[in-house]
Length: 100
Image 1 (tube, one colour):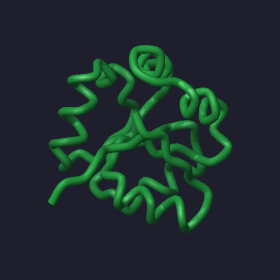
Image 2 (tube, rainbow, N blue to C red):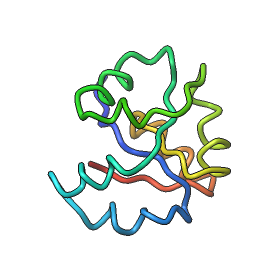
Image 3 (cartoon, rainbow, N blue to C red):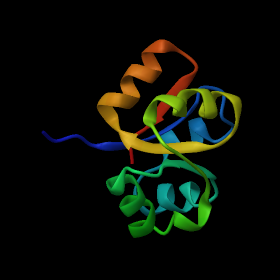
């Protein structure tokens, strides 16, 4: 089983359109301006935040992916998560995905 990781953010996030237009190092610099929520027990997400230098932007941890849509929709926090799970949240409404 393989899946890409994406950034989940609210549909109306002020950085959404900019992030979707950027690629590579420019996109990473823009991501470093965001604040993140992560699932505490998901080691891959935490590893990705650390490897990209985004762990300093981690503001909240939670126990499960299922609470991320509520948090993301109510705040400017973003989550790093598997694309397959994120697509379900996008289809439910209120969330968008940026693919780094």
